[in-house]
Length: 190
Image 1 (cartoon, rainbow, N blue to C red):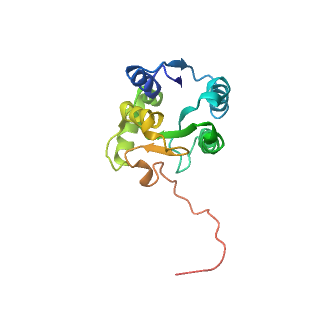
Image 2: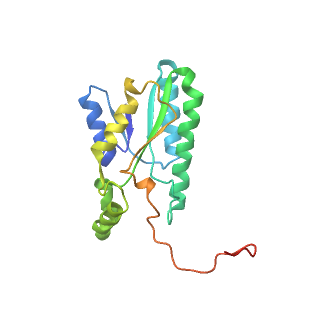
Image 3: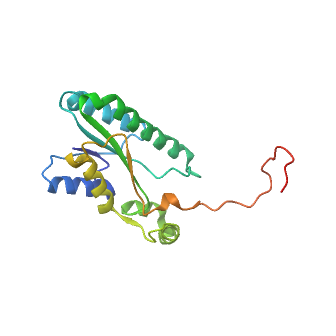
């Protein structure tokens, strides 16, 4: 298994679990950002091994089904990876290659340190907006990923496993500013 971002957080946990299951694991850094980095790693894995031997790919996405307010550039690149996943699942099925993705919600991991002093506030807010009323664990994301890589998922390709405690079912997380400037077309009234 080749794991990008396998030195910390979710990737590290996936690498650890795969090693425990007897897999050979190679860790790669996250030097290039999605979608370019994901495309290149996938392309090279295909050319070096997958096209002749088959296999499985699982891309890790980010929860973006509600848009990605204040980080639209990141949301757009992650949406490209979701499309790449589905497109390659179709194109490479005849080679015995399955391509899926996992979308974690807010996960208790080293990534929360990026929020600095407001990390506790972020955790409380996300938990309050998640039907499970808690944050996920790296082990829960790893379990979904390992399943999609396993023979038990032999009939699963082109799908996205959402591991978010139901967060994607809840309303907007980012508060909307008050305004009255949105244009109206027509004169309909109640």
